[in-house]
Image 1: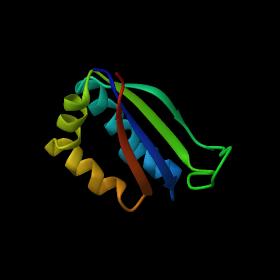
Image 2: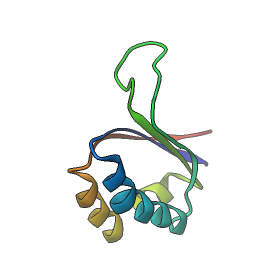
Image 3: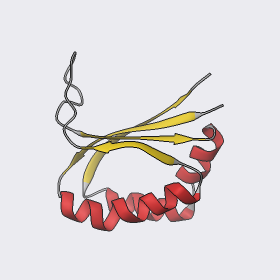
Length: 97
């Protein structure tokens, strides 16, 4: 069952974020079977304002297990530590029927 990881992020230093986290994370996402659907700044809320103005990343995965394997991998654990001072993130997983 296809699964999606949805991330909303308030990025504090975009240049460092892309260089130190974004590029290595993209390679790791691909290695674990994920593919990006969208990566973009400037979320515009139509209702509610929880993520208004933040960046959004949506990635498509073969299944929830692939996301969990990626998320708990030692390589991504290292990248989460790199990301922590650069952005505040909200990460969700949705499995499509």
